[in-house]
Structures are given as structure tokens and as C-alpha cells.
Amino acid sequence: MSAVLKAPLVVEFPFTRSLGPVQSDFLTGLRERVILGVRTGDGRTLVPPVEYDPVTAEELHDLVEVAPTGTVTTWAWNAAPRRGQPLTTPFAWVLVRLDGADTGLLHALDAPGPDAVHTGMPVRVRWAGERTGAITDIACFEPCDGPRAEPAGHTGEFENPVTGIVAAARLDYTYSPGRAQTAYINALSGRRTVGERCPSCHKVYVPPRGACPTCGVATSEQVEVGPRGTVTTFCIVNIKAAHTANLGIEVPYVYAHIALDGAGLALHGRIGGIPYDEVRMGLRVEPVWTDGARYPDHYRPTGEPDADYDTYKELL
Image (cartoon, rainbow, N blue to C red; front, side):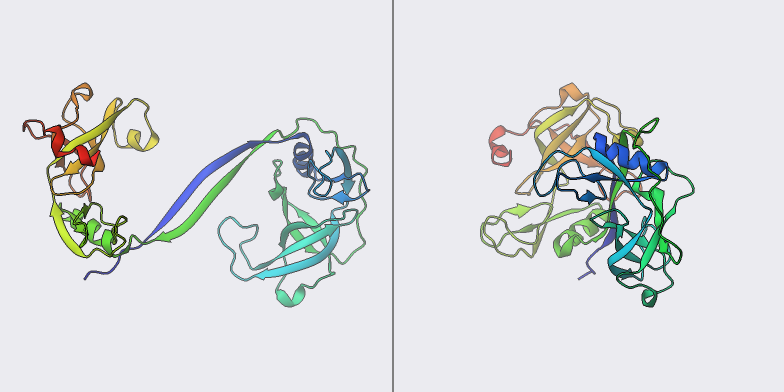
């Protein structure tokens, strides 16, 4: 048996969000090298500021400046920084209680090694050279041997306030399709489609799942299906998506569920070689491959008579 496939995958998208007045002032302040907290009804100063008291749920809006120096309250050493983290060399994640604040701010501490970090150590903000109104305007914290800084007494009023941010959300992971789908993918590279038959109900799953979801038993018997099949149902796509535009696919086009001959359920594929308004249930189709592709580019009509509804009604 061939080795199970695996491949690195990335899910990434820009997350855009608007800011309320408190977060807007906080991030605008960072752009101007000012750190603002918010004062609660009982006199605590929260940094980073929040719009509602986490204890009483009271709405908060009384901003107060705190100092760019503070004290490490807890920490953890990061020996292998990852992409997108504040520093490219080993550093410590720290919670810093800034002077004038009652809560900790999480950020990176630039230190030569874990032996140089300890709870209670004084630190100060190292500002980024270019600031845009984001938490990254604080490049990191660094050890502070000199006197503690004092707030400048800023009013919290700024010109051109930051009203929204765009944060890149990204997940890097390694995906493995498992034994059954590895066999399915490898067969596709040879322009064959294989499924697996359930030993109990005898349904042929394409793509195979490794087990029958109805009977709950493992499947191992491979069955080659197709290559021809029947359109069971379909939709007409009228909105161009980025991935189809890159492939030169123009709207409108048809995406269909296709029951390959011998399969116990339908898989999906694009229908080509026929005007979109002539696609219909029961249409007999066959795959069209392109050079180097590992799956059919689309399915086209075979010219056969349409399949009788009773032959595919259970696959809708």
C-alpha cells in the first residue's frame, strides 16, 4: 500500500473590524506614543482599556494616561519565534503592569535569555519606528535600568483618530487525507475514480471515507466507478469568485452533483461543453481532463439519452 499523503495547508483571510470610542482612542494613542487606560467606577485603571467593566458590566469611558514603564508580573520564554510574532529572535512573553495601571498588558520582552527575565523586573516600552495605530506600535518591551517614566498628562484627544483595523487571520497546519482518500487521490492521478464498498449495506462511497457512516463499519474493498455519470441536480453560478476567475471560468456556469456509474452517492463537478441553460437532471456526462491535472477539469455531455429518473432518484 502506498504511503498516506500529507501536505502543508494555509487558511488565511484579512479580518476587518470597526472600533468603538475607547479602542479607537487607545490605538490612536499608541500611534502618538501615548498609552491610555480606562478608569472604572471603583478607581481601577484597566490597560488595555475595555468598554465595559468586566466585574460590574458598567459602561466605561473615562480615559487616563499611564506611563510607558512598568513591572513584569509573569512571563514565559519563547525559544522559537514563529512567523508574525513581535521578534524574530528568542524572547519572553510577558504580562506587564504599567505604572499607573492595575492590570497587565501582554507583549514581548526583548531579553538575551531566560536567565535575564524574572517576575518583578522593571521594563519600558520600545516604540516601533513607524506607527499606524495598532498594538504593534509597541515593538516590544525592554529592560529598564533607569528611573521610571511619568505620564505626560495627555488629554486623550487626537486628530485623525483610528476608526478601524485590519488583522490578518492565518492558520498553518499539515493535512493528511487518510488511507482511503490517499488511494482516491492517487487513482485520480491515473485518471481513474475509485470508491470503497461497505461490506454491510454494499453502498459505494465516492470519495471514500474509510468507514460507512450509516453502518459504522470500516470499508476496504476498492471499486472503480465511472468514468461516465448522471447529473442528479445542479445550480447556475452567476457570481464570479476569485478562484474561478484565475482559472478563466466565466459566469454563468453550472455546478452539478454527478452520480458516477457504479457509485452510491453523487460528487460535485462543473459542467461544460453545453450552454448553461441546457443542463438538466438526468444528463449523461463524462470527465474532461487537462494535461498534468489530478482531477477532471469539468464534465461534458456524452451524447447518450438522458437517464431515467428512477435510476438516480435515490442519489439526490
